[in-house]
Length: 276
Ligand SMILES: NC(=O)c1ccc[n+]([C@@H]2O[C@H](COP(=O)([O-])OP(=O)(O)OC[C@H]3O[C@@H](n4cnc5c(N)ncnc54)[C@H](OP(=O)(O)O)[C@@H]3O)[C@@H](O)[C@H]2O)c1
Image (cartoon, rainbow, N blue to C red; front, side, top):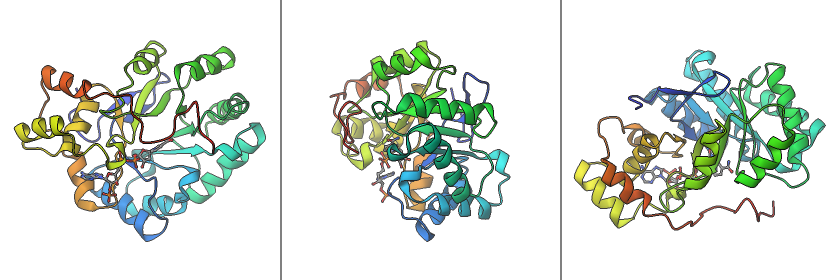
């Protein structure tokens, strides 16, 4: 079981990825994202999850530089956006992201959404970036099992990570099982349901027993399930609170109780039906 904020999981290519990171979707570029990322790194976070589509890679890059932490101790993820999918356009999008981030390699490069008719060419480009050493690990987001099966039919390299919406209202048990069979690590995005699952009465009861917040209980549930998490906050106090989950343990019964909150309910788009 993971014991600290900097504990890692080993991806199938041997790369070590922190189990806990900061997400920066909907965080404004410039001083806001710089403050968030620097607060997280100061609190001990070592992983940051951004994307070209978040339009804050420049600020993330500046915060990394100003943090004073050696590059090799940080784990930075970014993603190729849907309109850039395709072979050549993905290679160009990668260079643009690196330029903004001010980095010469990325730790994890992901396909943001399974754009129909495009994601296989995108994946070939990402495989090239991996072989060239520019991306130390590669993966996908928002891939259902059928998307993964389709990709794997032609892929040379199995994705190391599938980043999916996952929280107590959407527990994704079948997809987790499938990913485990294929040695693909599951990373939970919107682990707090973008802030919408924080008033769940059953989880509030568990939180009270442990003297913890609902957010902390949910993040602890993920970690005990072996799921990588990237909660987002722009507030330093919450960034610290979210990472303070290593001094308590949920019982098997509590873990089951949270599993039972599942309603297959999304706060974001369904990967089978998105229009962006
Ligand atoms: N691959 C994809 O398609 C995809 C899609 C969505 C998200 N993601 C990634 O996943 C990350 C996390 O997901 P998310 O941003 O949707 O949401 P989230 O982490 O589930 O929740 C963030 C929301 O909860 C609030 N919050 C955070 N900690 C809290 C706490 N301790 N107590 C009360 N409220 C709290 C935040 O508000 P404040 O900021 O005001 O604190 C924010 O409104 C994203 O930032 C992004 O990196 C990826």
